[in-house]
Structure formats: C-alpha cells, structure tokens
Length: 219
Image (tube, rainbow, N blue to C red):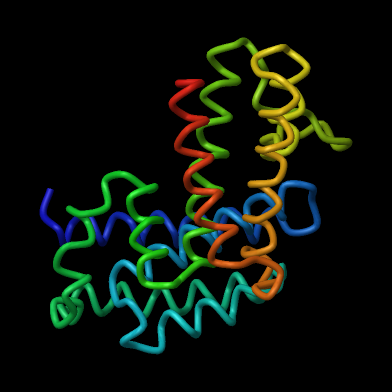
C-alpha cells in the first residue's frame, strides 16, 4: 500500500467513524465515540499537516463540544483533506510525506507530540492507546468489553469501566487501578478542551506510566 493509499484509507475510516458517532447521538455510546473521533482526528490532521494549515486549528476548535453538529462540521473538514490527498496537495508538507511510515507505534507518535510541545494531542493519543490495551487485557482475562444499555443495545465499555472490571477481576492491584484512573482523567481533560487543567509534565508522566503498564501487563 502506498502512502497515498494509506492516507486515503485513514481519512475514509475517520469519516465513517464520524457517521457512526452522529448515529449514536442521544445514547450512552455517543461520548465514547466522540472522544475516539476527536482524538484520532486530531492525530491524523497533525500527522499530515502539523500546524502549517488551518485544518488542525479548525478541527481542534470544532471538536471541543460533544455535539452532533460539531461532528458533522469536523467531517466537512475531513472531506476537504480527502480532496487534498486525492489531488496530491499533501505532498507539499514534510509530515504528509512520512506520516504513514514514522508512526507505526502510537506511543512514538505521542512522544513526537510532546517533543513539539503539543501536550493535548499527546494526551488523547496516549489515552486512546491505553483504552485499546485495556480491551485486549479484558479479552485475555475473560472480562467482557461490552454491555447492554437500557434500550437493549450492545455498547462498548468506557476505559474507566474496563479499569474497574479488570481490577475487580484481580488482573492488577489497587495502585495500578488508581494510576490508570488518573491517566484516563488526563485524556478526558484534553479531549474536552480543558487544556489549562493539564501540564506538559502531567502528559510526560502519563506516557512513561502507560508504557510501563503495557510492559508489565501485555495484552
């Protein structure tokens, strides 16, 4: 797969996630899907353009609130980016040339964001990576990753719920549980635009802690 093909697939997947998020409006599943869409969207736009074009600032501002209309607006931004990729305009940026090859490891991507002093983007990437790892741990230890809501629909558990269930199962101790709870809180503050609530040092510590946790408890 070429870089262009990889980027087209990634932006198409994000647009599909936007549609899935909008369809979940009004349900318990909307907030988790919105956070996933925001974090992955911000990471993608930054990988491709950095801050050299207004796409990143527009997407960041447009996804600060958890609203169906905000998701639709951000999908519009992604549509413009897809047209750029189709027309090879992304090749004018260094990030666009190398993004698909450099960031095979999302925690490496987060380190790059921290090096560039983009703590908030780093926090959402680390948090999403941690949540994905918690799901793998749950599956490994026969802990369900979904629940049935009041309407009888199957919904994915949040990171906090997975953390609670894994601790209750005895997969790890109370100290690990508290640390993960803190990491998820940092991610949520960044994802909801509460940027003044977290510092560069918070996110640097989060990255170290998540790396160590994933080493101690492989999925």
